[in-house]
Every structure is written in structure tokens, then in C-alpha cells.
View (cartoon, rainbow over the protein chains, first blue to last red):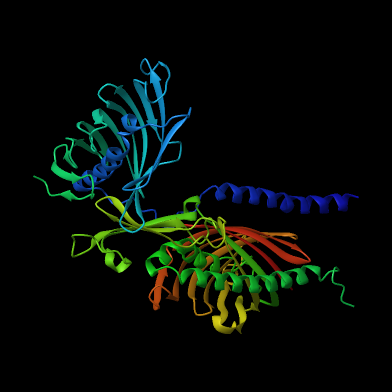
Length: 228
Length: 319
């Protein structure tokens, strides 16, 4: 009997060491392997890059923004409009009477509207061969039904592949009689640059990068011309 | 009388594991070559990074499971070693950037720029990433994406880079032990020939220092693996190890200096040109801890910790 107990003791010590060693291994296993796959950051933006991005966002806004005063569709409770062209996608409209907190209204009488893209949906500007600028919008509009014009606030997001940015509107004016915003500005922030796009009712918007210069952006072609 | 589920069962299981691993490895290699044919060398280098950097550490694992080598008693063992390098979570995806490149080489002419300059961003799952989501190559001009092309999915969705190798050792003469890893050269039809050969030598220092409380040995191991025409790998390891044995259990540990390099070669279908690049492994040293259980056969478990963490299990038979 004593011999049996001694044998068990002799074997128990190394047997107990196995889980101890495994536990040590698991503890060391907490030491993660170093990463080996490259994780390069996106190429840094120049001021001209930021101006170009802002221009493409403005292109989408110029096409979609006037919808708050050009929309006309009877017989529906929920309003949406789909676009195909320079910019494509669908925006939704919520008209109110009596301002932002007012009662739901039709497009023909509303004095305030929210224009927005649905979650995870975008207005897309096609660029090059398969490239794209994706713009999400959440715009508020004070509407003057008599003049068929509106002043836009709110803003949205910009995404083009690995790049993302945000923008807001500063009293951006649109009118049913004009194809392009007639005044006001869009303030675009990307890569540490603050870019202001100013509209004047034509297809040429002024793009100013704070502290770096000014460009002209063609809202029809997407061309950005050299600083003036 | 050979009883499959008798005392030979572990040996049979080890053989089955190896036999099962060979066609699986062949199928994966063929599928990998099929995937790589759709991407450029720059993409392939990033896509394969977790594989090319873990293959060497895997090969350099499990080359010993005890430091005890008799001075004058013949020992022979043979069996299978299974290794797996635990990859960092980030290694399931990659993003690599090439700036100021001629985009016409990617089939895109930049309007108004005769130099067609832009940036390329390649991203997506690595070879060990999502097998459902394709990668992407995009071109950028002035911070705007001007083209976008889907590429290839991951091959196996896992954080473990695995390997199986057969191994045999003979020792017990003047404190020396020789170890080999070998697979017969197999012709895999149009895929080419696949072969594995490795050899090493270990020497026990206990003959010079018989009063040491533990067994101590030094050794080296060199290996070469070809997987068809796709992969050529060389790996080398020099190590010092110590172990302490009881009747049922041997605990061991060691330190190794190691290196490895892998060459990948395939034909890019995009322009039907050959692609070849060589990657040197970043892991230069490791610490190993392990335990061997001596019950009928020798079952060992170990962990190698260097730049990468590698786990190894071995099933060895012999005397």
C-alpha cells in the first residue's frame, strides 16, 4: 500500500506540472503575434484634393437641392424622388406647415421641408471608369412658396473609396427657376482642410481652401481649374 | 495480429492525419494559384503576407521535444508534427498604397494629365481573411476615386496558419541525434512537383557536464519546401534547449535564432506575364516552452514565442 502511494506521489508531481505548463503557455499565448499584413493609411490629401472633393459634393447638392422647390407629385403621402444623370440616387422629402415643428403638409403648401437620403443609401456621382463619390444628405429647407425658392441648412457626408468628409450649408439658396443654387455656401471639411464652396446661380462655383487658395469648379463637368 | 484500434491506433491516426493533410494542402495550393492569377505581384505580396511570414516560423517549430540524448544507447522515433501560427486579428485584412503611379498601367487615362498620375489603394481580405468578400483595387486622382475593381476573396477564413510535417530522429551515439523531415517528391500533374526535405543535428552537452541537473543540447535544422511551381521555401534554425524528464512527462524549453525566405511565382492572367517575388521572414528568434507526455507514444505540446506565436503538437513513436 505504501509503495502504491509513493508511486502515485512520484507520478502526481509531473502530472500536475502539465496543466501548470499549459496554463503558462496560455498566459504567454496572450502575447499576440505581431501583424504582418500591410495596413497603409490612405494617401494624404493636398489642398487641391480637398477642393476637388468639395466640388464633387457640390455637384450632387446642386442637382438634388432644388428638389425642395421643384417637387410636384399628387396623390401620395410619402414623397421621394429618384435621380439619374450626373448624380443618381433617391432622396426622401418630408414637408411641414408652420416650420420645422409644424404639421405634416403636402409639397404644394409646405413652408418647411426635410430632404434626406435613407440610411446606408447615397446620391452617387460617377467618376472616371467605375469610380464614385457617395453623398448622404440630411437637408432642412425654409420654403417660400410664393417665390418658388428656399434656403437650405443641414448638411451631409461625403465618401469616395477610402476618403470620407462632412459638410454643412450656410444659407444655400435654391430657386425653381434656376438650375443651380443662386447663393449661399457649402462648408466642406476633409483631411484637415476647411473648404468653402460659394454658388452664384451659374454652373461655376468658387472653391476656397482656407489659407491655401481659390479654385473654380464646373458643376456640369467636374473640372477644377487652377488657383486664381 | 494487427488490431487497428489496439495499441497501434495512435500510429494509424497519425498516418491518417498526414494522408488527409496532403490532398488538402494540394487543393488549397491549386486554389491559391487560381486566385493569384487574377492579381498583380504587388497585390499578391500584401494578400499573402500572413502566409509568407508564418510559413517559416511554422517550419522552424517542433524540431525537438526533449533535450535528452543518450551517449551510447540507440534511440529512434518517428511521427507527425502539427503546427499553427496564431495570427494577429489585423492580419485578416490588408491595405497597401502606391502613390504617384502611372494609372494608365492600370488601364485608366487621367483627363488632362499626360503623365496619368494618381494613387492606387489595394485592400481587402488576406489569404486568411473573409472568403465571401472580394478585395478591391481603386485608383485615385485628386482625392477622388476614379476607378474601382473587385479582386479576390480570402482562401481560408482563420486566424491560424497551419502546417503538418512528418518527422523522424535517430540518436544515441556520442550524444548526437539526427532529425529529418521528408516527403517523397510528388508530381501533381499540371501543378508541378511538391517536396519537403529537412535535416538537422543535435548534440547533448551533458557528456561534458554530467552534473547538470537538466539535460542540455544544442542543434540546428535546415528545411526546404516546394509546393508545385508556386512556392519555394527555405528555413533555418539554430537552437539551445534544456529539459527535465520524469517517468511520464518531460518539460522542455529553448531559445532559437532562425530565418526563412519564401519565393512565390505564378502567371498574372491580366497581361500573361510571370510574377515572382521573395519575402524574407521577419522573425529572427524565438523562445519555446513545451511538455512531452510519454504514454505508449510521445505526445508533445509546445508554444514558440517570437514575433509570431506558434503552437505545435507532435505524436511520435519509437524507443
